Image 1 (spheres, rainbow, N blue to C red):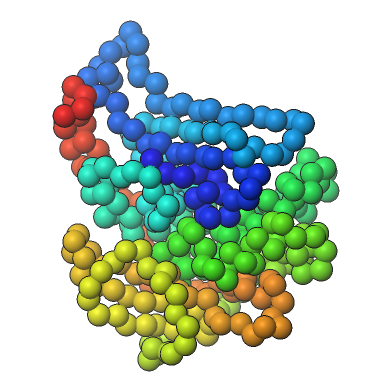
Image 2: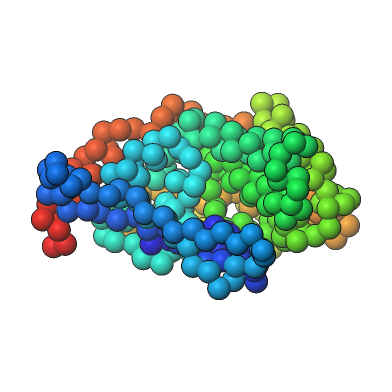
Length: 306
């Protein structure tokens, strides 16, 4: 069970509703029933045309694990994020085993899907015929979603992992765009220009080069890895920290940390320039490990809860 919407990213406001994502497992025996096949998805969404204030509204979407894995291979960012999110309400033992495969989900197709998601968002902002132009809040939402995904894309192609919940400085930038006036460096055209420039510079940036760890203010942005030593790799204004050991025995790489900016830095200066990938990654999410995991779960839950 995960938070959804702005709550997942710690980007919600006092008017935001509460969104939840539930991933569940149906008893395997139900899939042999041809008369009444199991329902694989549930949704509850509230539309209020008179006001944008939905602070008292609870919405949810629920999907069966088999269906979820099927759509996971399409590498939509929203389906990859639950494996890296820190705002988690409940995780089963089976899910934690699946979570060990999460680094394999950051394939080339995932990178392309992040880019596609960003381009779709800014495309709506640029399209004057889009319905989003009739609602200033909608325009802000498209802009801040594009920025949020750009920050995480920067981490992925740099050899790190998506942070999902932005750093303190990134959050300040995004919330300025979401809640600020549509003018100056938070104006839609300024945000779009910055995002497009970052994507265009992706192929022209330099790869990571080893360097000694730098001193300065460091925020705890890891994903819960404990113990082991650390080695920092930097490139320009980006860095990543590698931690070893852990209960699963797998290596976990924390996202690169954003540069420390001067007080006079414009608000959008925190938007990253996407670097070139540091290492080769797979084209798609491997199928065999997912099938093996799902088969074990289906056997364990053949009749229902154990």
